[in-house]
Length: 274
View 1 (tube, rainbow, N blue to C red):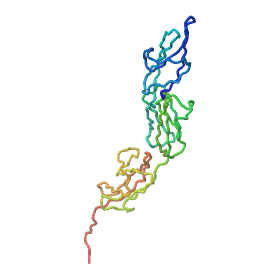
View 2 (view 1 turned 90 degrees about the vertical axis):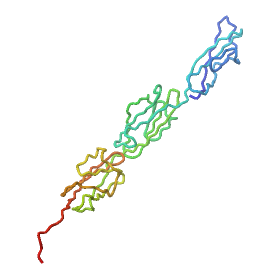
View 3 (view 1 turned 45 degrees about the horizontal axis):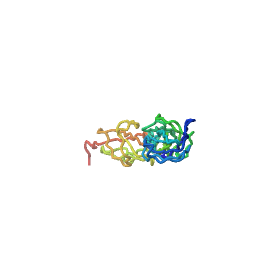
View 4 (view 1 turned 120 degrees about the vertical axis):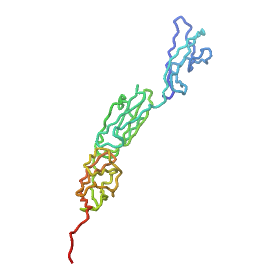
């Protein structure tokens, strides 16, 4: 993967030949008569050109009579780490202890992978810890709620490594809270009322409605407002306000509805005595 290769050279001459005398080695396919010869070595450390791709190595074998025979072989130089991605199914949050994720790479041939919750040293991962690459959904158990680092290592056939890390918050607890309308008043003389929201610290979104709500529906959520200005239905009488609170993880709670009576009619009297 870094261009350094080891050449194993086996040179033989016919029994009636003059015998092998020397060799020359070069990258590419040069003419043998243009090379510098040296004594034959069975093992030779060799450096390929620096560019990735297919490289040809030529070994010219010369006997004592001056006859020359070229031998060529090719090798693929790959110094680039495998491109890829770690995809956590539920994004930065999981509402289950089993975190679902996928590994993705553009060129899967010969790629292996290893993963864990927490730190993973890709350079020291043992070969038996690596699995054949797959983009199928994987699951790993976080055991309890909290923040985790999900680590993935991809290793290609040349030994190049790429590491991917994603933070995942495991959230197993629903939010808490309650509503108070007009500071607990029983009556309102205007449609516009103030709904005071008490919510646990991890709440970021809320939903208010004059009709029953579905908290698992994304429609209608707005940023949390602890003093929400709400408009009652345009009809005197008892009005009910429904609400939901939601955390960044998507966990939600349907709040206990609150009621208030809208009374906009003026009092009247038939007369009075003095």
